[in-house]
View 1 (tube, rainbow, N blue to C red):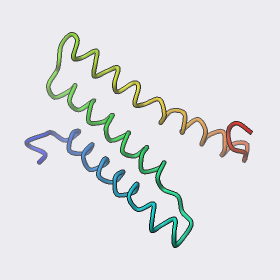
View 2 (cartoon, one colour):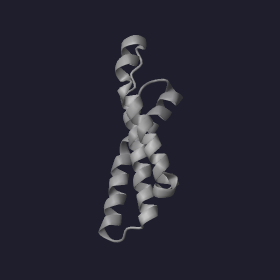
View 3 (cartoon, rainbow, N blue to C red):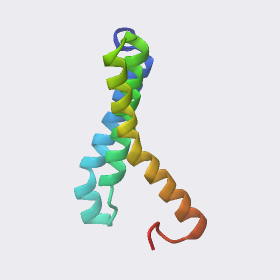
Length: 100
């Protein structure tokens, strides 16, 4: 699989699979243990998707419109991850959720 798709795209597929599994485990984990993993799984999937887009850019080297379109898609998908990281840093420093 690495020879066919490359290292970065293969790693992105593995990360996206881990995100999907984490997202789908929300029902048993929340029911039995009270752990909510849907947002975490979605963010892991988005990180894998952004890595996959970066891998496509590096492997196939698109030009013009396609390069701009892929960069814009990767940037838009990265925004929720950045807000989550900022919220986590704020929570670790202050002990209160962001927005309170």
